[in-house]
Amino acid sequence: MDLAYLAELPKEEFVLRRQRVFEQMQDNSALIVFTETEKRRNNDCDYLFRADSYFWYLTGFNEPQSALLLIKKEGLCRSILFLRERDPLMETWHGKRLGVAQAPSVLNMNEAFGITQIQAIFAEKMQNLTACYYAQGWQTWGDAIVQSCFDEVIDWRPMLSEMRLIKSEAEIALIQQACHISALAHIRAMKQTRPNRYELEIEGEIQHEFSRFGARFPAYNSIVASGENACILHYNDNNAVLQDGDLLLIDAGAEFAHYAGDITRTFPINGKFNEAQRALYQLVLDSMKAAVKYLVPNSSFKAANEVAMEVMTDGLLALGILKGEREMLLAEKAVKRFYLHSLGHWLGLDVHDVGDYGQEKDRPLQIGMVLTVEPGLYIPSDADVPEQYKGIGIRIEDNLLITEYGNKNLTSGCPKEIADIEAIMANH
Ligand code: GLY
Ligand code: MN
Ligand code: MN
Picture (cartoon, helix red, strand yellow):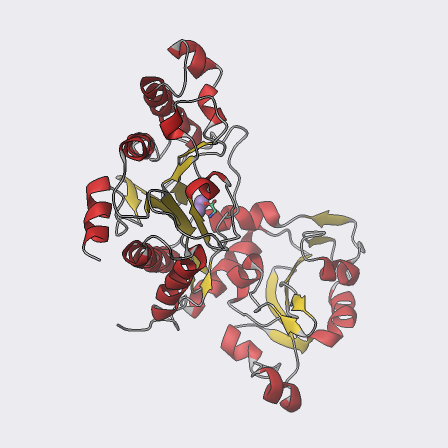
């Protein structure tokens, strides 16, 4: 298998993005974006660094202590990068740096300066400019540098988030690869799961598969939740022993070339759904399939979620988990007792990607958006429901690209039909 982990966007794409930003900036203005900071885990051990997604979007540069300054003055546009200076000793200890001399040609910038000079150079470049686009408080180390030395400070988040929301073909190819790797990891997890293994061993199997295909990082902390742990939505202890007869919910996605996949599958630890598990699982799957039909251009998350909730309500009534009059249960959204989150979210450089959803998640969907669809049902063990359903948590999550034909499932490589899951598990 080709370890395509050097895959990245064509360099021109970053230039084009900056051009589109310049087109939207007022004349005689500046825009400044700071990257993430390095974060300590304990004493002198840091978490591995990962660029701020907005900064990455405009630069494709992954070193800490960097900032991008765009200046539009009398119609002339200039991209300026601040970054760490070369330092042989530091590079021997911690790794190579791009350096100021190389940065303009490698990253298609007009100029580059050492980060230690940013305060002075920023002040100098700002002379005679009237507005600054800046996201106050987003990367707080930038706040002291920018201060509010402008008549007008404009938050760039709405502008850049809108741009990030509609994905280019090159971005879609990377997201597809993140989804593909994520799907392979879930299949491996299904094959490796059996009673008496630990949740964290299965997490390791997932990580192994990510690494094998060039995704060093998970896009978020993997959730490996057996039995009732599945009812904790962001469970991350991952330290329980897998029990025969329970389900295992795994929510895990690879980050590939900075783009996220986000898949959830729920399957039986012993390879065979029991009757109650099967009934609830099929209900979540049916609600997902109903929702997917509405995740198409000009429809919305809201419209799709209403359909999903209707399917769930009917199913829960039939199983005796909800009781009462159908229209009343629908009107009061009774299903929300067991379906605590929303149907999905945007997906891209961040797993919960940026972009406006509309007041009620009713923003019309557009071609080029990528999103998740992830209905779930979580029945607490103390719920007033038939005994056999207590303590079951199920979520199924796929990633969709909105297309002119409706949508394309980017995670279709990951099985979710009961028969397919049982067949995979039976053969291992
Ligand atoms: N993995 C987080 C989510 O599904 O939203
Ligand atoms: Mn997820
Ligand atoms: Mn998700």
